Amino acid sequence: MFGTTEFDGQSLYAEIPIQPDNSFAAQVPGNVPFHMQLLDKFAMSIANESIWISGRAGEQRTCGGCHENRTVSSPIAPGQIDAVLRGAVNLDVPRPQRVSPTGFVLSGGALAGGATIRGVPWDLAIQPILDANCTSCHNGDPNALNSKGQPVNPSFTATDNMTGMSQTFVFDLRGQKLPVTIGEKMTADFTASYISLMGLGELASETVTITPPTAQYGYVQGGSAKDSPVIQLLNPPQRFPQVDMNTRAFTPTAGTVDHTNMLTADEYYLLILNIDMGGQFFFRENKDEATGYTGGP
Image 1 (cartoon, helix red, strand yellow):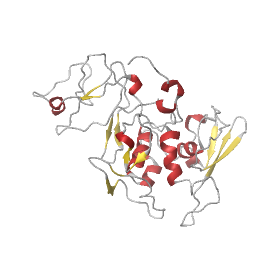
Image 2 (cartoon, rainbow, N blue to C red):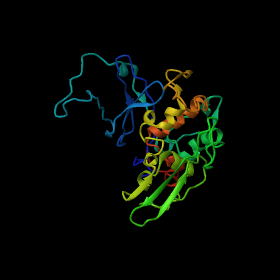
Image 3 (cartoon, rainbow, N blue to C red):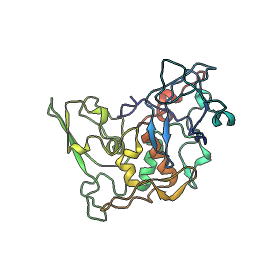
Image 4 (spheres, helix red, strand yellow):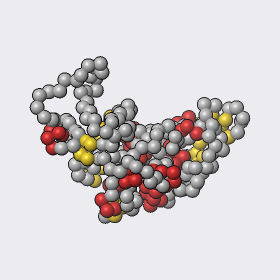
């Protein structure tokens, strides 16, 4: 449990285009569990395969369909599928290389150096985006108002029904650590921005009551960016097959401040990727035990 959304720490291996016959093929490391997501043109997951699969070295696996009979061999239509004819995308790299190699500095609207993003650690990849675009308003001031005269930093209170202890949190997208002293797992590992967007998640035990109740799960649905209120408000642009800032995923909500053009294409992408990978705080890039790995593949 690296974060507060009950997801394992994940690593992105690649985004692979679907061929005209709806096939894809990839060469992946043996004995490593994988799961797949189907992305739309906005880079958001629209289908999440929650079952993890793996193969032995040299094994070739073919999916016969989502509802195939698992007790018999899957029939494969005659001929070669497009993905095989084009060649499987090789994703098999040594374990020490399975990190984001050039950091998360964004330059000229592109990920610096054409970096392959593996993990999206909150303090390294997401917090700089919030610092540059969000914290001037969302700074923990409970009296702050937006241009429409609406409060921008709501608060919620968590109360432990067993002990009577309570703690009040104010919406704050800054990066200072925020100690959580109530609930099942008291901790100071996470930042104010992370708690504000993600909610308390697994940190709150079943005996904790949160008021107002709408604050219980935060503004992010871990594993589904498209269903997360923060992404719907920011309204990301098209990313595939090319970036189009004029084509947006959602219709702006009437009566709210327009956040549509606050981020660059890559800033949208990193935030979406973090959420679709479970909304984690820790990844290999900011987890000390992982970055020091020197073993084999």
